[in-house]
Length: 140
Image (tube, rainbow, N blue to C red; front, side, top):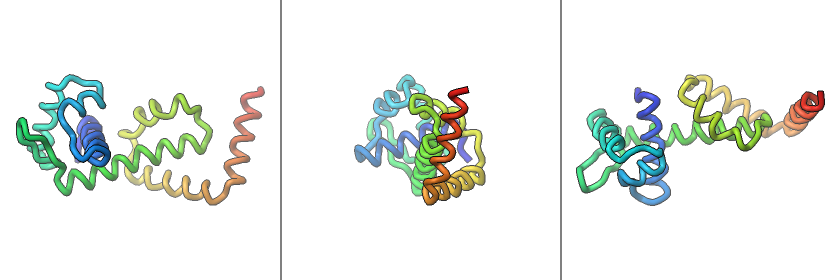
């Protein structure tokens, strides 16, 4: 299993490839706000661990395993953002909160949060009740 740092790189590489068709070291560095030399080191490690194939000066592609993990990591991130939004977390806090918790939850917990999100979306009155509860708590 990849480390949390490796997950961040795989997720970002997956996003870049899906949106642009490629991922360059400079693009990854910009997206993660790290130095290109740090990206190169991590990309070499990810290549060694068979999450991607990297050729110096030629670029990189995710392996089937890397793509599968990247897709799952993007799903996890989007699901957690959706969950926090549904339960009424302030929009300006959501991204940072997701970044803080996403690596600390098991996939079992992620799956249960997914179940809860599906339930809440099918029961909008429950969401309304929850938001009313928040409103009342804020008034106290």
